[in-house]
Image (cartoon, rainbow, N blue to C red; front, side, top):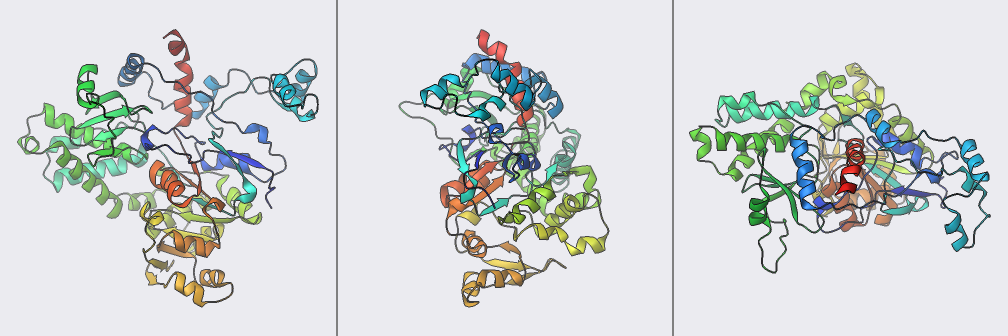
Length: 505
């Protein structure tokens, strides 16, 4: 079982009021969490740390950095290996070497230990490095968490359990949406020639659908950088549009503003920006009569269709090795949780047909035959699986119906949910799950009843969506939450490369 004194430094959803201004970070893959909150006795909590820097450069310097990105000189897409070279200014010291260094002289913790009356009383201090080496694969935290209070750990699937190869995966939706816009909605055939650039975008931006702008705000809701399509907006124009308010701070919460909270929205942004450029600079009467908001709605309609009609799912099912990143540590991590008495659940918006494809490939580490796929052995990793959950409504609406999934053909069976669990009497939750533990839809009340969890603080949920996974689960239900940020190594690489420029400014 988990040691109740063992503390886990995780990204907790201790959130402000504007999701786009948050910067909560976790490793690039779920498996890298294992070594940091594993129950293994070899795990050292000294490896866990909190990010301590908070830099808010002035307006002109951030605009210059944005211009550099536009010119292709710092897009944050570097590989993890190159990031490690930049972030790790000195090679990691072994424990013995570090202890030896500590024994021969003072450490950076001496004054702190003296202040709290522990000077010379902690022999383990000698194992700590004199200089902390920060890596993109570390855990960044806002709060500490005692794992002894966590009884269930849940995972989202897309970009959490399953990481995707870029830009190949995004191009499925991008190319499919282009064809739908041209062949079904009548957009110019020239639109088929545009190319997808996944390195141009970052999460945390806001899309102004009425004006066709992409904006970046700081924690004070001041617009630092703005683009119209792919074209930078001048400082004066930007201030006229977003800063000329008397005694009023814009909220950016109106319907016209869309937060880019997930990596899936890079496709939306790239398509919308290309449509804006074509409308403004091309000679297409069809687009002249459409507003920017109508362009955005057409784009969203086309991308949504790609997720529903098989354009994405069917291709991934045919060639999963082309689109899904294999992770050798995922299965051992999930098994370790169950062996230690922690209940593990999967909660995803993906429907059963696609979730089965992705999870079978991750579980078997290969594209196996149909007979083996139909066994869905990966479900043994979880106490409970919920697909088609419709987050964030899943965490707000207590009246959504719960359906049991027939794993053989994907058909749905009605359940009475909470009433059925109560009617089964003693150990009703387990009896209910014994009838089948894969469900579609439902709501958070069903989840807590099946997990037999009494309080939100006993659930840790790991996901990649700032709003539906992190903010909503924390604010509405009081869950502990962790945020997966695959782009973190590249972001940290850029941060460290820009330190001389920031210091000079």
